[in-house]
Length: 507
Image 1 (cartoon, rainbow, N blue to C red):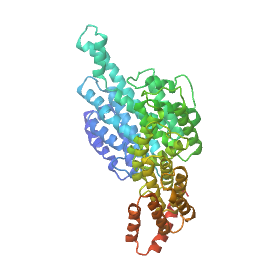
Image 2 (spheres, rainbow, N blue to C red):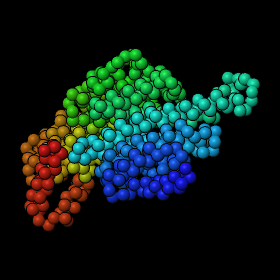
Image 3 (cartoon, rainbow, N blue to C red):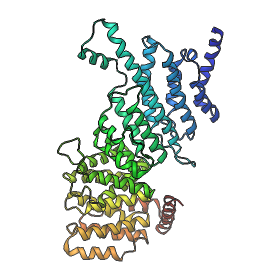
Image 4 (tube, one colour):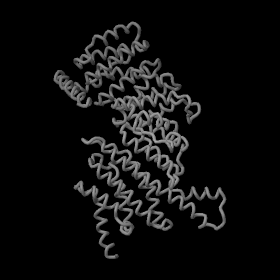
């Protein structure tokens, strides 16, 4: 046996290097090989092995890593190592305590990061494979930690004193021994619930089934879950619902937004559906969200604050958290546009602060963007806000005018349409004597034509609105400095514009 152990140590050391191997098959196989090593072998180098597998679960330090299968196998190998070690190690020993602490401090966070794997290649959303494996591993890790907590609670009183402890003493011992605490429970439910409201039917069903097993496991009770009663009402134990069907799942799952500790991550997943391209999914999820906002029977967590107000704060959090991440920002803007079209937020108390912060966040997001859908959604939102009779409306209108000189012809035309509609609804933005002339300029200018002509007309409208022309002319000056031949520059710009539009239309 000793001879076998001495031979396996170099093998483990070599396996630890699998992630750096240029051979993709070696990386995939190495992760699974570590997962099936016997306990006697893992005990020798368990921490380096688990550390390597944790780092291999995510693409944080290697964002362009195309090999999703290696990350899937790393997640699977990691949970196998955890189960092998915890099934055999003496929990009361120093090694046992170190293993369980490592699972809590390193393994669980690594699996949470794996839930954010949204890598895409020519096969589609390959990150969903990693997320599916991560949900399974998180469930199994949860039971590992909860089982250890249950054993620790039973053995702690006997170790300290043979007399019966009071209820207060038992609670104190439970809190002290607890590895699976409320913070981990909250992150677990929030991460899996986010997957339960996203766009892939299979992932949604797996996520809900995982939450069901966590809530109702007969062998091992999972404690410390915030809003457990609400979750059990949303995901009942005895009913066999078709969770993959959007019209069945969304009306239930959207109610998780009531829980403040889950609402932000859940909304960041929900907007992928409500602002996505799949029409049936978008209709079902949007209808569920609007129905939730209008349902007077739903109790809200914060007294005195409407559901619209709480949702607006969560939306701002999503925009701040995922800045410049078009995968989330574009559908979020589409969601905001849809909600505004349904009169949500327009009469909300404190809407001015929401609109003001929204304008602040839209500026950096739209600047330099080539995403046609994102730009159009942003223009529509600026149009809604510009129609408001306050200072925020004026700021939004100023931003809207800038896009009249955008390099994309279609965006210039969309901005002109929005400006025209705004002037019909808010006549305080331009003086009465200039209003007719402004509408005439908007109606008669060919905004999809020459970009220099469009920028000249934009300057006229800026002057009528009293904004000046310095800000809007900065881009023109930069264009002039980069392109001495204006006509050639405009021609190149038009070709680039239409090429980009074709690209983002999916052709």
